Length: 334
Ligand code: SAM
Ligand code: DTB
Ligand code: SF4
Image: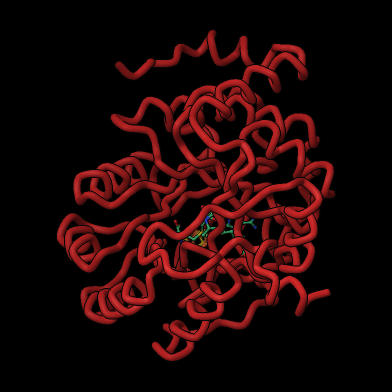
């Protein structure tokens, strides 16, 4: 039976000496995963900017003056080209984000077509489109959508200070709809919003106490976007970030944990400690939605240095997709 975490137990984990916590997380990680395998996804913004929501961290909210270029829903050819490139460089999942409060009914046939075409290429698909209703979720599921990303971001109490245009309960309702439609859940948080350790504890309890925890948990480090209310936030301490990953690994032992936004500002040593703590997924490719991500060549080097390998395709497993053993790709970058 699933363990229901109590607040004092999670507090005790955060209070452990760093090395003890890391050891515990590594032991659990090794029980459930190949410790040297990393799942890699590539991200594309398919509709950028002018979002009606007011998330204080986001470059795409229409409320803030940021330096992004707004773009309507991208043409199919651009999306498919990006997916092909992602597959070629070794990603096994293509994640698409749209800056909407929710998708409109008129967009559904197009979204369904995109999912089908990318599935035909043999890749996993993930979308993040804001809130969705049950009929939309069923349509996306039937089209073959594997994952839906919808983050809880932080604790229910602190959330109100970060987003005012929707409630935490609405986020939870959407997660419930995704679960019921048969799509796998990708839901995690951001650290560095100005939250306290208690908020991190509450976020992890919310995620782990869902009927079934998310299959994928992105952990983002705030990328401070000029023009947003959080542009001058203090950096979160590296040790606190790593500890949160370790506690996530201990609490949700079978979930993939993605070292998500913020890697561009992390040293190789910091990323290595995050992998030690139990992170086993990354976004690969030099752009996230509107901000930068490490260059592919840097990730390939880090993988090689650490002896890490990419999780293989399990749909239409026809090509070698090991990003550093893929000699043709690796040589091209040397
Ligand atoms: N619009 C969709 C939604 O609300 O779910 C999804 C897109 S949003 C960009 C997905 C997640 O990216 C957010 O929930 C947040 O965790 C993360 N994110 C957005 N901007 C970020 C930033 N500046 N730094 C770090 N993470 C960020
Ligand atoms: C998630 O948790 N992180 C990704 C993905 N889900 C959609 C997005 C990160 C966005 C970083 C800021 C930007 O590029 O605009
Ligand atoms: Fe819109 Fe998502 Fe950005 Fe919030 S995080 S402003 S919902 S794109």
